[in-house]
Image (cartoon, rainbow, N blue to C red; front, side, top):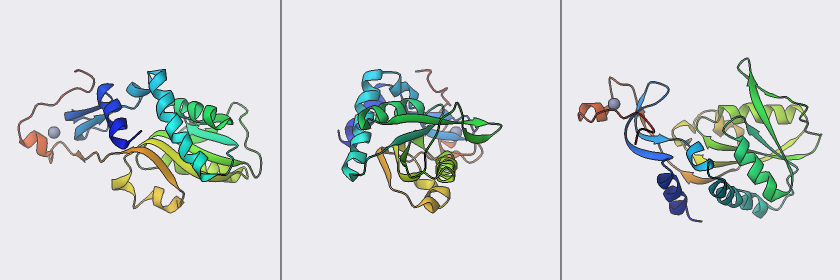
Length: 195
Ligand SMILES: [Zn+2]
């Protein structure tokens, strides 16, 4: 599957829209991305995650555990682990902090990959890396369906220095309402998902 085919899957599912949107942050953007709208189709989730998993098969080393951040990463983690033949576990936020709960374990020396649906600043992934290392696991890499980290590469993600595999790279510019160039063109704001 090429990056262009992945992009088409996103567009057909309404998971990537172009226009003029107010993001949940309050900022305005010319694109709207909602990976869950692709992953709601199990056949598409399987197809995309097969490809993502194959990137890690190429690296050669056997992966013992796939860890993902809840909620967005859980489906991706499940599907990738199915292909790799290993466990899928997830971290979740408790009082704002990422934690491994529910009796999930990572034994010392186990090889781990961290997978997510969309990576932006890499903040959640960084927290998970610290959890895995704290338990003695070895993080082999990061896998994401969509990489939109480009504008943030100078911060947290870069400091991790881990291989990052992705199926689709997109840049999403966001503007404050006062500085939004799309507002200046007089294009009305759309509510995501209203099309
Ligand atoms: Zn605007």
